[in-house]
Amino acid sequence: MTFVGKLRLGVNIDHVATVRNARGGDVPDPVRAAVLAEEAGADGITAHLREDRRHIRDEDIDALMARLTVPLNFEMAATEEMQEIALRHKPHAVCIVPEKREERTTEGGLEVAGDEKRLADYIAPLREAGCRVSIFIGAERAQIEAAARIGAEVIELHTGAYCDAHAEGDIATRDREFEALREMATVAHDLGLEVHAGHGLTYDTVMPIAALPEVMELNIGHFLIGEAIFTGLKPAIAEMRALMEKARA
Ligand code: PXP
Image (cartoon, rainbow, N blue to C red; front, side, top):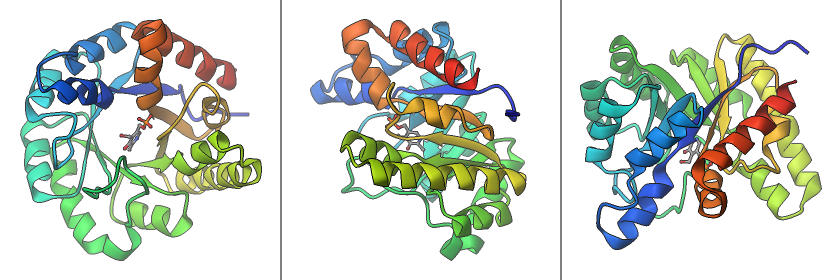
């Protein structure tokens, strides 16, 4: 099997901020977690500044931009406010995600196909500012083709449905979801898009995704932060990284 390149791990630190915000103070500090993740070998840090600021806050983004030595992948909804923040900070990467206030997490991928003109205009200044623009989408051909047409350089495939089916023991659905991810990774790669994947990945679900030759980056958060309670963040990241490398070997 020929892999497109080295598989990177982006560690999402949002849920350190979720725990902090539960008490409203300054601890635990997501920036401290990001620095630890860097020391543990994360290739990048991912943070989602949601419109309702339920976890990451504006000052976290300021601090991450100032402190990190690895790239920041800034997840955000396609709103004017977020575009202005991204253009101010110019992070290495911007990942556009759909956002609904009532959802617990990013439940589905972005609907690109029906909104191409707006999204093309929206991402153009981000690209001009030097940000690598990624679009978080489901494993659907129409969305991937639309992402290529609007000028995105990267797509991140939503692995949530595959992971949920695995957790529920619904093997038929899991395998069907995996097959769609596998096929759409090749479709995206053939269109010249860099392929990333993430959402809901755990030690149990990461290896088949890591083994997809076109996938170049995984973004993983909730499971790693939960596991860190038991083992510490560095060992949790090291274990995830070891599984990714085993899958790639
Ligand atoms: N990638 C994207 C685009 C996301 O929105 C999220 C969740 O914020 C993740 C990856 C990480 O998902 P999880 O926290 O379930 O590992």
